[in-house]
Length: 356
Ligand SMILES: *[C@@H]1O[C@H](CO)[C@@H](O)[C@H](O)[C@H]1NC(C)=O
Ligand SMILES: *[C@@H]1O[C@H](CO)[C@@H](O)[C@H](O)[C@H]1NC(C)=O
Ligand SMILES: *[C@@H]1O[C@H](CO)[C@@H](O)[C@H](O)[C@H]1NC(C)=O
Ligand SMILES: *[C@@H]1O[C@H](CO)[C@@H](O)[C@H](O)[C@H]1NC(C)=O
Ligand SMILES: *[C@@H]1O[C@H](CO)[C@@H](O)[C@H](O)[C@H]1NC(C)=O
Image 1: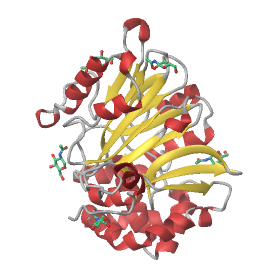
Image 2: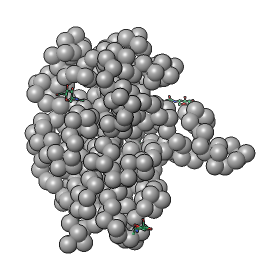
Image 3: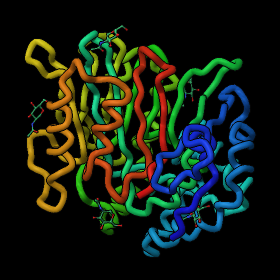
């Protein structure tokens, strides 16, 4: 795999002057405005046109990942997409398939794959002034494709941003987003069941079941329609979803930060910031707070916690949080992007693509 991506290196080039950006330098993310009042058929047009050249790579990825046994079930979902997938998602998926001239089933699959297969680190922390900050790494096994597809999107109404996400071209859900002056939210995969047959089966059966949401579609729905931290936490805790995950939410007032541990039907645990008890940050990788990570991945959480403890709440700021998640192995071969954001200071929101 070649890591000589030059697509997104404008800011880096500015910073380093005449020196060329090394592939390992963090790279800024290309930003789009998507008008959510425009019809589903056209809202993604610019993104889809710009990333058309990636379609062969996307198809290769999808075909590598899907066990053939499940193709008939995927086709069933695609054939009757409005029954199984709610709006605006069904309409947007159809628009993507049309613009990219690929099977609807394949774009549905892509959206399923990225829905719940992300290994990550997410932290919500309160600084010495009571400001809430949120930082996240997104780790993914087949990371190069995702690095190439990573974009930032301002979802707008009448030219005003309603919410912002760091996401992928061709993907209509959200696993990292901000509703300005309200909340930030990230999704981390729960448990190590990726690429095991029953995992696919469970997801597809959940979709056919209809009453439940894609993990990441629920996040977008909440970003679009919940105006407060409390409502967002409520929705993310109680709506039925396709798979177990962690939702990590940061608010705008002191004490507003939580890791929601989810099974499909409801929350199993909520770990809140708790300043009177000196819990000034909550941190989630991919394991339940009350259990030990497996031996092959027991360092990400420990190292991130040690870095946060060393930092202390007075040390929290954009740069220091970026450093915490850039420490090995919190940052690792599979880390595809980093975000630092803070809902009460929406302009802080920055994402960087990370190359190994
Ligand atoms: C990602 O983009 C780089 C640079 O354009 C390219 O060399 C590489 O093949 C792409 N990889 C994938 C998996 O899309
Ligand atoms: C608190 O806010 C002040 C003023 O904005 C800033 O200079 C200081 O660095 C902040 N302190 C912390 C601990 O964030
Ligand atoms: C990264 O992904 C590979 C599979 O592509 C996996 O074997 C490896 O353990 C992962 N590394 C880390 C540090 O998570
Ligand atoms: C937000 O709510 C409106 C009105 O109920 C609905 O039409 C829209 O689809 C919702 N947005 C999302 C992303 O679910
Ligand atoms: C669970 O989270 C709390 C609050 O952040 C922390 O004090 C505790 O150490 C965590 N438990 C484990 C096993 O990491």
